[in-house]
Image (cartoon, rainbow, N blue to C red; front, side, top):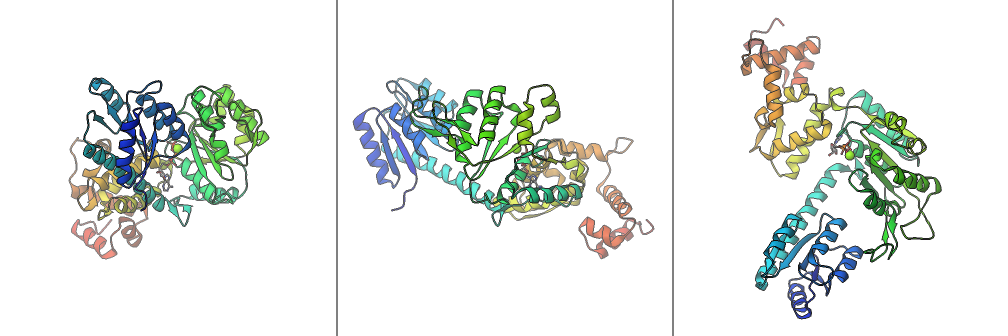
Length: 453
Ligand SMILES: Nc1ncnc2c1ncn2[C@@H]1O[C@H](COP(=O)(O)OP(=O)(O)OP(=O)(O)O)[C@@H](O)[C@H]1O
Ligand SMILES: [Mg+2]
């Protein structure tokens, strides 16, 4: 029988542990038992688990520490804690720290079966969603960057040229412009495409944690280092390591990284001999690199090493034609993901999006469409389906001088007039831009007595 998921059961009471392992194995899970918190930590570090079921109160290493370790290892592990009758407070604490559920002693085995089943289901859903996302995001194994903007097309051409070289690339641009997407594009268009693409956000960790993530450690390097852990630099061997928010790296870490890039070898924490690595580095930041190198917070020598090629991605507000294109791309993506029949965006909604300046860039637009599809009950995405700031923006954008909000008819007239003006009065092109056929446009013009425009 194929395993329904990998489960770790932790309990320092031998008989209780044996019982739980037996019952859950019968449910079809691949179950490992750990008779102490210490044993559990070592197992979590060395093997992937889907769900961890742990007693809270144990000698030395308790359930809270097991929970913490699981979250450090992967945000995808679901942890269920078992609490004693006398410690309801710790159950609440565990839930606050992100446990999936708590089971109070004495419990019924049925309850355990059900909760474990639900946690596994959540994991499967997460995985399915991720697979779907990846399927849409990668096209024949390649990343799809949607654009028709001349500047962006030149940038893509440049990315295509540097992708197959082993050059380190620095990608700059405002938040949400697509820096990580470009990094993936470079990876999947290089000879390393079959190797791993790993990403790390340098701003999301303390110095010590980031060091552990990047360089790894030997077994016994510090208390709690129960097994050898390869760092991301080593794990990205033969592939690409994406260093996001690179400017957030501390000076000490910058020195260490520079050494690794120059020497092409990495020393794990607590190690004595370095390991050769063949990893390509792509770094990204939304900060001004000139500025941070000038003020000394970022080492110039590391900057030169990373910035062999620079790709600067323009903000979305400077890529006029891309908004509508991206709208339809995301609409298709989210309609498929959410299995909904939403295929259109109303002209009014497109007009609002077209004149908005998107401080959050493509990510913000993506969120707007995701939300629009989510709350839609079929049909087109309308202005009403947009978040408050955009709805308010649309009202502000269209407010007349006397403060009155124009009717839809006035609005449509103004919009048609604007589009016609943009295309020099060419009705065929204007109809295309408006997403209607020429006859419909002609009828509208006649109906609104705009024949003469
Ligand atoms: N041209 C594009 N075509 C299709 N999808 C895009 C495009 N640009 C960005 N995206 C999508 O927008 C979202 C944000 O992009 P990404 O994460 O690459 O931005 P970022 O610049 O790394 O942002 P941050 O600085 O906040 O980390 C992602 O879901 C990405 O797939
Ligand atoms: Mg990013």
